[in-house]
Each structure stands twice: as structure tokens, then as C-alpha cells.
Amino acid sequence: MAGSECFSAPAQRNLPQRSSWQLNGVSEVMDLLHIDVDIDMMKGKPGKEDLLHSRNVLRKQRNWERQLAAKKSKRKEEKQRRKLNREQESGATGSPQFTKRVMKAITKERLAEAQRTGLKLCVDLSMTDCMSDKEVGRLAGQLRRMYGSNKKAARPFHLFLTELQEDSRLYRECVRMNEGFLNYKIDITEESCLDLFPPEKLVYLSPDAEEALETVDADKVYVLGGLVDESIQKKLSFSRARELNICTVRLPIDEYMVKKNNTKNFHSKILAVNQVLDILLTFCDTGSWIDALQAWFPQGKGYVVTQDESSAKSAT
Image (cartoon, rainbow, N blue to C red):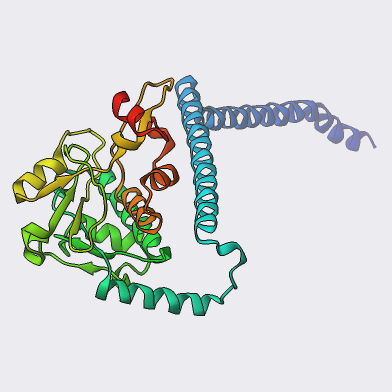
């Protein structure tokens, strides 16, 4: 017993030291883990500059989303307004409803007839070299909407896209953005309008022309400048018409519209090619510039239609 006591006593005396050593070791390991965790957290924790950058990105994204939603809403309202105008003008409210297949066949035949006997309208695409990539993309969108309007028209135009090179930015963008572009019922050519028609038959529509367009003549070929210019270079289409040495006219905006006061004091007569086509199509259907301009001239351009022609002329 005495020997066993002597043997166990040292073990008992060494036990606290060993426990203390273990605790100290665990503590050191925990400290190391704590340091590692702190380092990881510091690595993942954004600084003030990062937080400020993130907030700016979020703010820009929210602004972009709000602008996108506003544009979508505006387009939807505009689409509904145009549909209502067409129904009122054509009396389509009580007309029989056709299936999509039948409507597609009717539209195809109507466009084919326009290519044989319809009024001719060229879009001069020779000026795309002076446009940015963004402007080229916008023009491709305008051409898509232009073709959409022509398809829906009771008497569509025979459309030509002139000087459209297959290796150009615009051609690639039209193919990318516009589904079925290569199957459009449009004459697409690399030639100019002068190569296709005699100069005495050509009439170039430019907002800078002095003479107003009074009526649409079946014997004439009308030309629109295919141009989106956010830098507002003046008289580009007018200069192009002078270069071609052909007649120029403008839409009769001054004759039938007056300036409207707005907070930005903004007034512009420059229209997209699809907007010009919509006005021409409605005029050909109704014979009224007032109806055509009232239906299709954008409200944001700062002009409103007046019923009094003399007041329109005096206001300009």
C-alpha cells in the first residue's frame, strides 16, 4: 500500500501541470483560429471606398430600371393610342376577325402588290459612316418599326433600302436586332437611289427644305435620309440631297402646327424615318395633313396641331 501510494502521489502532483499545459495549448490554438477568422473577415469586409462604389452602382441600377420601366409604359400607351386611331380611321372595330395564318397571307399579298404598283419610298443609308455604334443601333430599330408600320397599312409603300452594304455595321445590326430581316418584303440594294430612278422623279424629304410637301404624287419617288444624329449636325440630309442634285421638300409642319410651351423650351422638327412613314401612310389614307400630324407627330417635340392654318404660319 505504501508503495502504491508513493507511486500515485507524483502522478497526482503532475496532473495539474499537464492540465494547465493542455489549457494553454487550447488557448493558443483558439487565439490562432481567432486571428485567422479576423483576417478572413477583414479580407471579405468592404472598405469605405468599396461601400461607396457599391452604393453608386445600386443607385445607377435603380435609376436605369426606373427609366426602363417608364419607357416601356410610354411605348405601351403609344401602341394603344395608335391601335385606337387605326380602328377609328378604318372602322375595324366591327370587322370580322381573321386567323393569324389568314392575316399573314393577306399581309404578304398586300406587300407584294405594293412592290408591283405601290408608291415608292427610299431610305438613303449612305450617311451611316458618320454615326456612332449607338446611333447605328437606333437606326436599325427605326427600320424595324418602319417595316412593321408598312406591313399593317391598308396601302403600304414599296420600300427601298439603298446603299446598304452587306459588310456595314448597319447591315450586321439589322440582321442581329431584327428577326427575319433578310425576309423583309423590302428591296435592299447597295446602289444609290440615283442608280435606280431618274433624278427628275426623286424628291428628298428634309426638315431643312424650304418648300413644303403638299401632296403625295404617285409618279414621284420619295427619299428619306436614314440618319440618327445625337450630336445634331445640321442640314446633313439637305446637304446630301444637294450633293445628289435632286428636289427637296419638308413635311408641312409649319403650315399645320404651332409651338407649344414646355419647361425645357424644346422644339424640334426632326423625326425618325418610321415616324415620317407613319405620317405619310395616314395622309395617303385620309388626305388630311392635320389628321396625319395629330396622330403621329411626337408630343415631346414641342409642337401641336392647330386647326387654323394662318395662325400656324404666323407662329413660325
